[in-house]
Length: 212
Ligand code: TMP
Image (tube, rainbow, N blue to C red; front, top):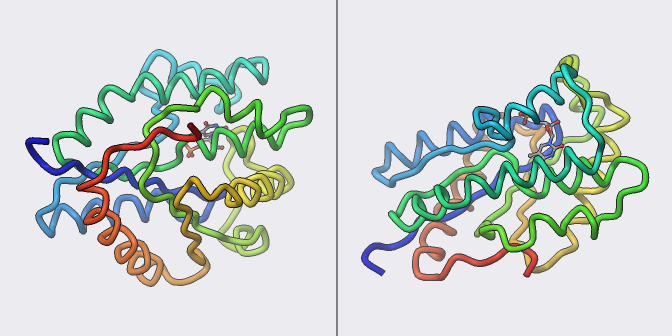
């Protein structure tokens, strides 16, 4: 390898856990310390597929549940060539949601098994680290009202949280759970320590394939 690869770091969690704030803070810190880093997020709503997903989430369109699940997955796959290129160039990617949100949200709907939900994302670039920002539904409620988008109800978010907990049992994924009820700064410091460690380890390892 001409240069050391970047790390693939994913932040997951239910709504209001602070994922986006923490992704931005981590990227900023890494860049300031001279490490190439960029943020990505899923769904990436700017692509043609992402626009379909975005309209669905904003309740501007209805899509059949299996169909939208596959579109969320396709939205990840369409970004894989770019992700691989950036990682190979040595850029660490900090990603706001990934396949785990895909599986947790769809499998929280009636009639969907975890197994079926995982299938379309098998083989995606495997994150070197998945940080789950854990926040109880009661604490999430204290952070204010949910927005207007689909899925933003406390009953559904609780079901999603349970599905995430099933996903934690998978030892093939490097899950790290952080208590998101701490201050923004304390959470950031926890995330920084984990990330710096994994960036150093991952640079000498090949990129893995998720759930394979
Ligand atoms: P966000 O853009 O505010 O993070 O919200 C995206 C919403 O889409 C959120 O409710 C989680 C949901 N989602 C899925 O249902 N499947 C997926 O694959 C992803 C990435 C997100």
